[in-house]
Figure (cartoon, rainbow, N blue to C red):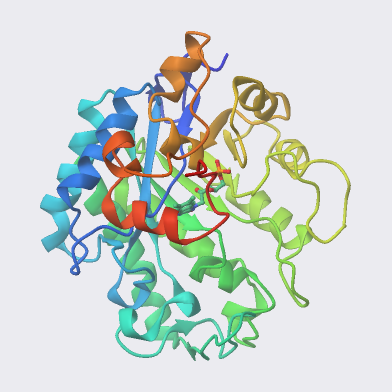
Length: 360
Ligand SMILES: Cc1cc2nc3c(=O)[nH]c(=O)nc-3n(C[C@H](O)[C@H](O)[C@H](O)COP(=O)(O)O)c2cc1C
């Protein structure tokens, strides 16, 4: 099944079920324009047989700029840059998806133009996190419009679809989580309201038949924090919308509840909740064909590869031929050997333990 085409509800056919997971490349120009070496990186993975390439998270507003070298889709000046990325992926033969994002309270002050913003004035539970400013009603409406405009821009740029980044502690998740959302107004009484309004606005902006997906994290470790019940509520609301996929962000595809609420793999539980009403993408620690097939066996329809798509740009072609994929990063020159943009290559070597790097 892994290498057979898969049709999304909108009718778009994916060449196979193997997806490059969204990954920030830390390599764009300071104004968020995509660098040519990032285009090479995308094109090589598309040529390598991945059916779908989801891009790095791209900020929809300068107030959501979260990483050095992050892509921007915040205004029309970014259209040529976005078009070049869509083209690089499509010419390689894959389906192209732009991930749209706002970092909220995770944004460093020097990138987001002042103080970070969020649902409430609660810093992230990590050392030295600064206290964000709580968004006004008017600003919330502006951000909903910014997500919608970014999605329309992705469509104009030639992307086949967009993925709304509602995972990994960023702004949309900050509204769903009781840790970061302490509001008493309607955005706090119904913590799903903001992500649902964003999703509806995005669907409206791109029109029927254009693929839109939504990525989310199922739980948070802190108390109060996001729990399975919150996620189940959100998922039940999302499957009522004409989405083309839901994408769960997990560090291991077979992981059970982070906080011990249940012992079965989260992916299987989610698949049961969704009941095949919307395709599900599974992710997390997939290295081999057996891992990818296990993701499908747990109930996902598509399987995303993150770090291994970096160490093995030809993963689908090699694995389909029965060859072993490269699972580690060479200890030197990974950038030129594996076509990795400079900013990402630097991070891979700097952040110990993130990637499996060969011994020198
Ligand atoms: C370098 C890097 C950058 C990432 N950037 C993003 C991102 O922009 N958006 C996102 O949703 N997840 C991001 N992630 C998380 C991945 O999409 C994926 O969920 C995670 O790496 C687990 O999959 P893996 O074990 O196959 O790497 C990133 C991961 C890595 C390694």
